[in-house]
Image 1: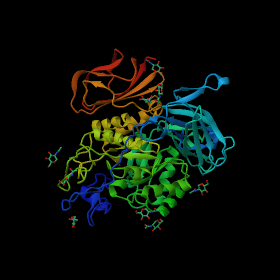
Image 2: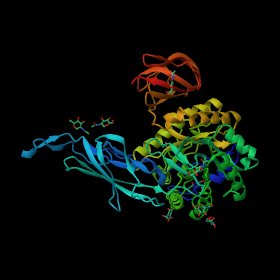
Image 3: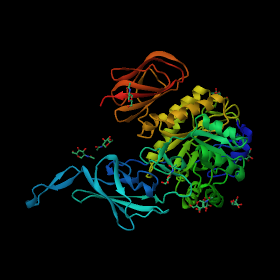
Image 4: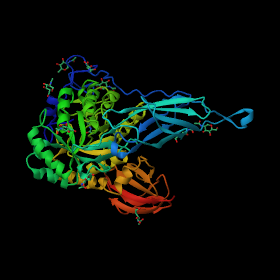
Length: 578
Ligand SMILES: *[C@@H]1O[C@H](CO)[C@@H](O)[C@H](O)[C@H]1NC(C)=O
Ligand SMILES: *[C@@H]1O[C@H](CO)[C@@H](O)[C@H](O)[C@H]1NC(C)=O
Ligand SMILES: *[C@@H]1O[C@H](CO)[C@@H](O)[C@H](O)[C@H]1NC(C)=O
Ligand SMILES: *[C@@H]1O[C@H](CO)[C@@H](O)[C@H](O)[C@H]1NC(C)=O
Ligand SMILES: *[C@@H]1O[C@H](CO)[C@@H](O)[C@H](O)[C@H]1NC(C)=O
Ligand SMILES: *[C@@H]1O[C@H](CO)[C@@H](O)[C@H](O)[C@H]1NC(C)=O
Ligand SMILES: *[C@@H]1O[C@H](CO)[C@@H](O)[C@H](O)[C@H]1NC(C)=O
Ligand SMILES: *[C@@H]1O[C@H](CO)[C@@H](O)[C@H](O)[C@H]1NC(C)=O
Ligand SMILES: *[C@@H]1O[C@H](CO)[C@@H](O)[C@H](O)[C@H]1NC(C)=O
Ligand SMILES: *[C@@H]1O[C@H](CO)[C@@H](O)[C@H](O)[C@H]1NC(C)=O
């Protein structure tokens, strides 16, 4: 839930935000995530639960094609496609594990063998122009095929792309489609921002690199009180000096005072502080969205657009996020669109359809997950509002929510979008008894990174000094080598096996002959047992302790350490056996 004040009081926030009359609710019943929460109203089924498709018994071949990046620029010269061809029991086209080959040519005898290779052609739909003609292994994912832009004019409109795949005997065929943007280079001072569809990272081209090539940005920052920032340029500079790479200025009313915003945005352009432009109060008004996008789309530090702020909680129309998305893309194809979802399980597919990047904002610190403090009711899957929807009230709610959203996405027939975490940087009132401690905040950051968050934001700035400091400290580490090379160079393997660390969450990222290891202890109590972590490869030595405890050692190809601090968080680079 988002409020106007630094520490939103339940009542202020309730009066303003938790006021939807929608979906299955009887008339006059206020809801959050579709559920009644006032003690005077009864529980009912809110609906909108995610529908996991049922696997079928026969194997299917699920061929998909996607551009490597959400946009290409003319000056890139060429691009690449990601082709996946996994065996699936949910999506895809029928698959028979037989291909005939003509072994003794002259006699035309066809000999059956396994179907292991798919021949693919990738072409531009309207012209039939062939971009790729190649082969992909059956049951493989993440194959890359490059193509040149020669003959493809840069334009604002995407090109429709088709893939045709056949078994080598031509008897079995498959098809898939996608769109690619090949955009004119920016000559108006604006930025271009692309999403890596393979590993989820963000890459920017703007004034900072003189519009030459792309640089990686791991966004880390806060939703900030724009009125606080606008009190003095010093507030803006102090924010960036702390280490934050991105900012989300939140207007205190429907829109900004554009004169002040322009002054401050000029300063942000000078220091390359990247903004998530926030349209939370206006995103359902496409006229207003169009006006705002036209005003700011040429800013060199525009990172992305931000539309719905918990549209699922508020019960906004199911088409609202998609309508805003379309309005934005029609006039600005150069930037991603983002939004945050607050509910655990309420019309995920519909609300998520209106974004390129999805945020989760489970706030677990200081809550009572099963009893609503402001309303004195139970909270469960059909009733009540405890400030963190269907949470357990532990730090792991953050990583669990990332995993839940990842599982929803994997069960949809659309490509998965990068996920970000919005971390609790407030508390002390309403649903939340306390502001997280520095260690709790850090643990939530590590849990997020370990569970594949590709960006971090926190509600709310100004926060406590320790929270601001730790966000900046980790923000700087994430933005620099070697960490960004791992986090943007692959996807993590999460939930690795740990001995003697029941709440120790560990993930690894392997790039070349090294692995980054992220370690987050969810236990507040220190222990002194010998802890062993088994990684997906044999570790030969610790290369660097990038952050945290430097006592991890290698034993028998595993990481080992005597004892864990409460809420310990470590980032290591290790060398692995080839
Ligand atoms: C829900 O609670 C409100 C506020 O107390 C009350 O006015 C309304 O009649 C209740 N509606 C139902 C259907 O229970
Ligand atoms: C196809 O059959 C071969 C030979 O039996 C087997 O190795 C392979 O795993 C099978 N492939 C699939 C996708 O079932
Ligand atoms: C397909 O690949 C997956 C993931 O690598 C593997 O678990 C599965 O056994 C493979 N299936 C077949 C039929 O080869
Ligand atoms: C930026 O790029 C332009 C066009 O390539 C070039 O003329 C200019 O010298 C570059 N400026 C800097 C500061 O590198
Ligand atoms: C939508 O935005 C436009 C442009 O800012 C404004 O004129 C109009 O009043 C808004 N509509 C509503 C219903 O708020
Ligand atoms: C943005 O740049 C375009 C040209 O690319 C120009 O037509 C438009 O006026 C500019 N908008 C602003 C607000 O500067
Ligand atoms: C969006 O949904 C609302 C509410 O269901 C509906 O009234 C409206 O017509 C829809 N708008 C469009 C453009 O589909
Ligand atoms: C939540 O509130 C209920 C009811 O007041 C209480 O019994 C329970 O102990 C509380 N749980 C926590 C974790 O505070
Ligand atoms: C949730 O709590 C309400 C109120 O106690 C109860 O009526 C309802 O059956 C509960 N729902 C579930 C799914 O347990
Ligand atoms: C750590 O890794 C870096 C980068 O690969 C390498 O240059 C350095 O020699 C390694 N140091 C140790 C102690 O392994």
